[in-house]
Image (cartoon, rainbow, N blue to C red):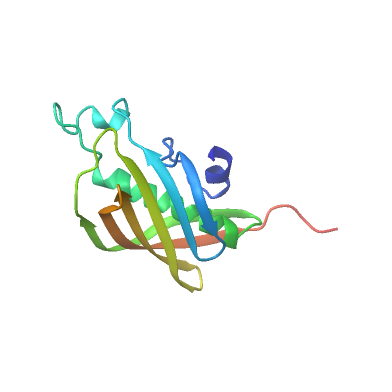
Length: 145
């Protein structure tokens, strides 16, 4: 995973994906994250009542979307940046002990932008949902003889 994220220009040090459940090339991906009590970002959010920060849930969706980006752009150095987030809704808190399933669907592709619809589910119930756009730039590496 770390090598994949490095190739995609995503140096985030904490990977929010424990397991890839399913990748439907160019369309959908499902991943899983088990939230444990010793995650570093839970210590101050909130003392005595730890809740996974919403931005980390969004990060899990983005990292899952990068698996689809990897399928679409299999060559070169790919840089992905978050361009836009729409309709972000937090429906229920994610707490230690929860298993979060990220479901990401590629909705549109134009020039160097990819639009996704994402959901984070806990026990089949939607915890977070968002539409987001990633801006993609590709730099070919190597050379032809």
